[in-house]
Length: 373
Ligand code: T4K
Image (cartoon, rainbow, N blue to C red; front, side):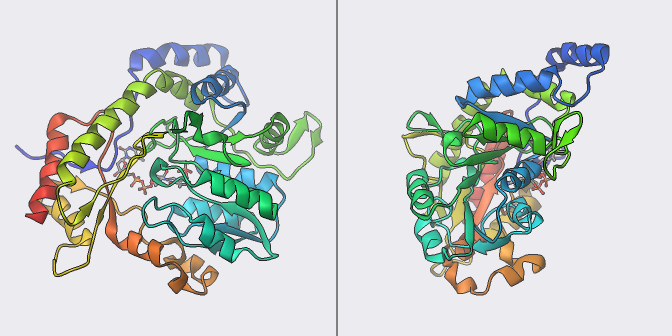
């Protein structure tokens, strides 16, 4: 019997029987977009679910980030991480801003606030950390940094849906926290995203910006864009939300299995999960140390898994942002980024998703263990 491939993720989909009634409503009312009833209900539902006060839905996570930055009317340099998905840096450049890369912490893979501080100059206008893999940044240090230097902190929280720290939503930190609801995320609306903002007036300004800048039918007050979420995506989101807790629990269970199996391999470092944080296990990154005499490497493992087990683990995040040709001119000194450079060459994300079957979990486990035998 031929093996089915196992990909790094597989989107959760609610039962179609739960989606159909909402689609029937859309077909009946013909309200397809422009802040329709499902859009409004999803905003309300997410505020309750995520324990936040203000959320604005977007058509994807990239536009959420782009518009959040735009709303601050910034000019100058934004300090960010080189160890992220390309959309983080793209959104900075699309705003006519200059990305400046600071190094990450070698354990959390998140932007290191001390390294950020070293890169602050009079040109710095904001800091954009990413809660990488859903692991919280050092939010207290970033808060002090923002206050001390009078800089807005915009979190790219694309991976951090549903994460709490000390019982508080991680999304409540920063001037903004942006989310992605892409198919590959813990919570998906096919394509989608959101911005969590601290105050209602900020939310209103984001809502105007994502709707061409319209204040009312006859007034355009800002250089807006179309970044609205459709009623279809909002309806899908409303159906997903009922299943999110069970999806998160299933992910945590798989992470426990992986950690117990791979924790014994001397060359493999498994993620460290803090008891103070309710993790969403958006990704399961392992780190393959390339020190010593072993010929086993991260890239060797990725190839082994693909060739022998049809398991498609992914090298998130390799290459680093400044290693893409367009961004190379934004990094004058790669030697200042040693932690990011070694993470990019040693980390691989293993397949993890709520509906992973037992034989799929076993196949991933076997594929890693046999490589290191
Ligand atoms: N900031 C950060 C930190 C991000 O990670 C992202 C997105 C963003 C901002 C921007 O948010 P969005 O604008 O995307 O909402 C994926 C995603 O496309 C991207 O959303 C995500 N980060 C990034 C980390 O990963 P790829 O190129 O790895 O996706 P792809 O198409 O190779 O998908 C991975 C696997 O998932 C496939 O092998 C199979 C499975 N899959 C994928 C899709 C799209 C499915 O089973 N069904 C699907 O529909 O970028």
